[in-house]
Length: 432
Image (cartoon, rainbow, N blue to C red; front, side):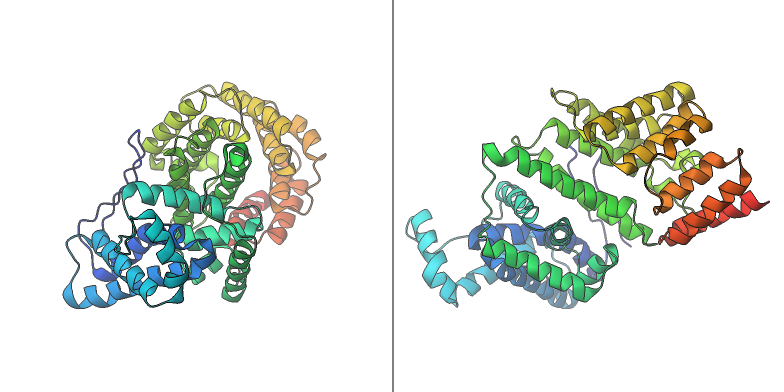
């Protein structure tokens, strides 16, 4: 039996996994997800990012030993503490038997620890938090492509295996391995370290980190795979990494809280978005009793925090839109007018055809389909299945032939099997 409780609903958003009872084979993968990145981050802070593979090897060997030992002797009383002790010992052994210790690490340790080579790998909560934050900025360095940053984040910061990353990003294991290898090489060649960004560079670097976490969350929330449980994991990991930013005074900024609010609002409806066989359920037909109202409250908490700043980011506006979608006991005209106004402001801040597409639906709900159709045909997204699906929706009740035509186009264009099933059901109803 497996029972984990992620305490995400207290004001501090403290993410604490509580283990009541489970088998060793179930516990280790979960601990790998939560502790692997901590160990690697602290080790890279010690070794330098140039030796990230060494850190990965030590962390991986630590969990391999846990798998071997716990299977024979049982789970220790404090599994996390056991892992930390082993990681410390393996690090000491590695440093003592390699030239790295003689040439670099030993010298630095002697300078910082009173000329003594008797030292402890600092796995204190404070150092773990600092190291993870620094690693987050290093991994999300724009010197690598967005795809590489996401792959690195999934591997280093989320503890995902190559198979899992390949599935999440709809790619092959070989491609992911090559992408990770090149990304690490770029970090080494450009001598990227784990130092915290300077005050001058912090804003730009933080914007990039938030962008990567936003993309990572969307990989899960709008996943084109059918693995609903795994999609949730991506969303949880994005939220967990964002929480690290919210815990640091330098990065706990309004836009960080706005993004957390957005994540909470979206996640609150996760369980209502699919039926028992994985077919997507449109917003209007979702079972609202399946919405997580604690997460909605948490989203409101973070949205309120985000209002303390003077600037409004795209995350503020998207969180506002998501907030309106959680409102059920309000006047529908007021609701959709509110959403439409937020989309209008969002387009002013950052125009994109997809945002314009979403605004068109809000326009139809706030006014009428004919008005929305005039706006929709101006958007250049003819090869996008979402665009064709929207046109079909706007033609529904106005022109059944055009509705079917655009549904057929959307089915042909989509690569998402869940969306395809939903569109086929709509086509069946439009044909009747």
